[in-house]
Structure formats: structure tokens, C-alpha cells
Length: 449
Image 1 (cartoon, rainbow, N blue to C red):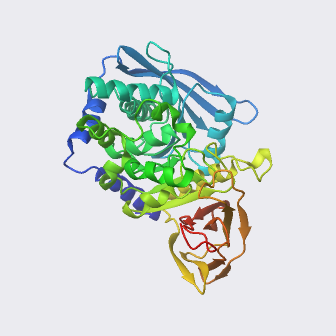
Image 2 (image 1 turned 180 degrees about the horizontal axis):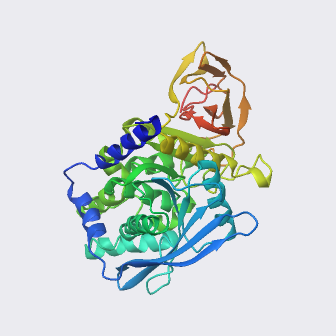
Image 3 (image 1 turned 90 degrees about the vertical axis):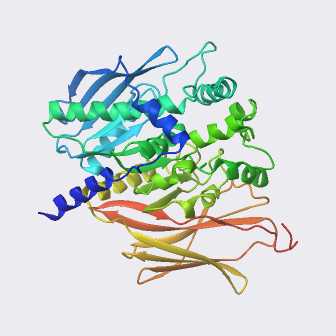
């Protein structure tokens, strides 16, 4: 058996063992909803588009995932296959909202080229606008949470049909691959941003076909601890959470229904099922979350895990210190490199790090195997612990035999935050990996927090 075949066999076995045999009631609710038969489920290949110039193919699929609250959920699902790319038994699946548009088509083809395997993008997650008020996005999710709390009807939380849509999309892709390529898809690397990243976590918790995940800009696991952290860092809840705060959902009510809702939709409640490989991608200037929010759940995540912070980038992950054409390169390369590692069975770099205070300076030591091709610190200073508008700057580190050491001097006033970044490549594809963020708690001058 070749190395590649052995690696794929191991990956398939990992997927098969991914689910535990027992489920808490909240998990059972999510699983019960997802496994419930759907009479309307069905799919078709609407169109097969092939570029005469490049030879790239786009398969445009349509399917109905379910009926939710008397609404038929319809989706567009596109598969991108560049001319030189052959099908693989593992597929990268990006989850997003709205319909296919040029930016996402370009992204899908670019990812497929860099991963060297076909890529799928699932659209219309969620179906929207919905309900009497024609709500969308966070306003829609918040409304469904409120209706659950009032009715105790466990079909209401919108994350349930969102997860089911992804599960049904994987069903469609498996059937499509057999018909079109004669090759089965055994596993999926699932990714999405914001509430679609939220959906990514939950899908991985209940479907064994998900072999790896890359949740993007959903830095909110352990919600019960995240909200107090926001108050301390910002002085108030993020204005981006207004759909939830205005409905009395932040913090989640201390009622049996409120706590049950939290246990159904917070990926933190499923963390013992999330030992699969995971790449967490965040922006340093995301207005939704505290900059060091990852620290409230990172140590409790089991299994192989990596983090990428995109410096000077907000919730859209567009780097503001780069030309427009290059602003999403960090995101795309990270997703592609992670996926290529998973599909080929080649190990991701192994990183460990340690934060210390040495002789009055803040020191970060990173031990990396294999050794990176480069390394640096990213550093920012602010008056308060709110770093959402801060400018992040590079600072040099020493790098020798895979050990990177960087030091920063605490400011006399205000606060400082920093993290390490390492450079890697796979098959010529360059990407970065990061450490956790360390944020100072106290002003050196005032000696108080």
C-alpha cells in the first residue's frame, strides 16, 4: 500500500470513529432534527459549464434540503474543477449565504487549483429572508432563538436547519461524484465564515463524514465566558451583537430553556466530539469578538489544532495593510494549505509556545517542527483592552533550529497585545500559522488593572 493510500485509509478510519456512542439531550435534539427524513429532499445537475479557454469546469447543482417551519429550503451548490485537477475521495466544502457570484466562483476555482482537488461551495445558508417580518442573518437567528424560548419547540433555533443543509449537501455531493466521476467522496473538509463557521463547528459534531474543519471568524466558543470578556475589553457588548442584545439573548437567560438553547447551539458543548483536525482563522480587528477570545476555549479543544490570525483584518478578513488584489491571500492560502495537508496525509507543522515575563519584558518562545522558513511577532498598543481599531506592526524575532523567540517591552501606559507568526509552505504554496494572542492586563505606570 502506498503512503498516499495509507494516509487516506487512516483519514477514512478517523472519520468513521469520529462520533461518540452517546449523546446528551441537546445533542440528541440536533441529531434528531438532522436525521429526520425529508420528503422534499432531492437534487439535480442544472448546468455543466466548461470554459473553452481554460478548460475549467463548473457544475451547477440545485437541491432541496428540507422543509422548515413550512418553508422549503432550496440551495445552489457549485463544484469547481480546474482542467488539470482530478477528483479526490476528500472534498473541501465552503458554506456561505446568497447565490453564486463572480467573487465566489473565482475563489472556488483558486482554492481548487491550490488544493489540487475539486472544491464545492454551498449557497443559501440560511434560506432568507424568512418569517412574517422577512428577517435575515443575525436578526433571523435571534428571532428563532426568541421563539424557541417562548414555545420550547426545539425545531425553532435556526442553526438546526443550517446544519441539516450542510449534511444534505454532503449527501448530494456523494451522489453527484458517483454519477459524474465514478469516484466516491468519503470525507469532507468543511469551512465557512461567521454564522457559517458556527454551522461548521456544529456539523462536525454530528456527522462522521466531516474529517477536518476550518471555522472562520466565529471566535465565540464558550459563550458564557465570552460575553463577560467583551464587557471587560470593550466596556459594553459589541454593537454588532445588537440583534441579540436587543432581544434579551445576551447573556442567554438563566432559565432551563435558555441553558438548553445554549447547550444546543454553542459548539463548546460538543467539544469532546471535536477532536478532528481543525484550523481556526480569525482577524485581529474583528469588531464582533474580543481580540484574545480564543484563549477562553483553545486549551480545552482536544485533537490537532492550529490557529491563523490575519493581521489588520476585520470580520471580512481583508488585510488593510495589503493591496486590494492581495487582501484575501492569507485566508485562501491558509484554507488551501490546510486542505492539501489533510488530503495528501502529510502532517501539518507541530507548534508549541510559551508566554513568559523575563527581566520585565514579555517573551514568547515558539518550538516548531519542522522549522519555519521565517517568523515574526505582530504587536499592537492601545489605551484600553479594545484592540479592534489598533494597527498591528511586525517585530523581528530570533529563529534558530525551529525555535523562535520574541520579546516586547510593556508600555508605560495603556495595553499591549502580541502574537507569533510562522511561515510555511507545501508544494510551493506559502501560508502562515500563528500562536495565541497575549494581552497585557495592567498599566505598568499605574500598576493596576
